[in-house]
Length: 332
Image (cartoon, rainbow, N blue to C red):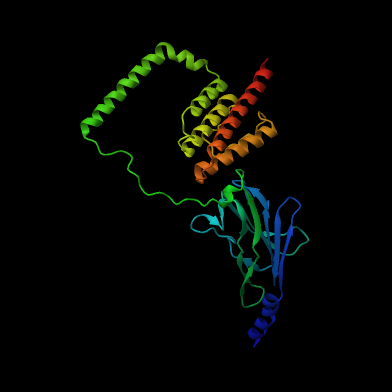
């Protein structure tokens, strides 16, 4: 009878005193929802609630519990693809069972996730179901508290067309080279060795000085001119064009400013660029938008028009000319 009385006294506050979700905007541009059930209060905050494709979104889940109430961690679990809804999980940090500040009775359970997505449009962060156990009575009582979904708006840097363009499926295997006899391969290897030897002689004899004399901006201008004359845009080879374009710009940035651009992902490079003062804030913004838009073409299979590609080439030239002029002016 004593155990039955304990259960009857515990169930009403735990399962019947649940408050509905409260969703509100935060001062820093995020969105927050809060729900309370018995001895547990959960707050979910997504910042920002409006972001660009490839930009990071921080998701903070915090549960405040009464003493002797435990939360099952992690509260948010990524699926088999490492995603939460349409967002990829970049990092996940949990801080369980932390005492509240002095004067407050209870415990704090927190999980912080950094997310991103390359899909533009309106989407929702899915609802979260969090399990807990109440050990305040002689018999433990378990329960689940669920939050509401959070609406998030993801905008594209390359126009409205990107929001309606579906990603293409992966193509099947393609045979790149027909099987040739061994003697053909032997001839190719021999010709390649002769070409390497000849190139080595030219570089040692007279070509080395010319290559060494090129400044980063001169090399970038020469490479951009060669890319413009390659005919890739005219033949609708958009992906090879953008790979070469961003490679030229990244090597120029490394040569001019010493930033490790060629070996970094776009998010890693933008973080390093933000810590450096060699570029002005407007230049950093333009460069960040340019690289994110190029990533949409290279990795999300977006296919812009040849005119858009020529505009991207012109933007790269303008960036080289602008930063080269500033450097020359500072040196004189």
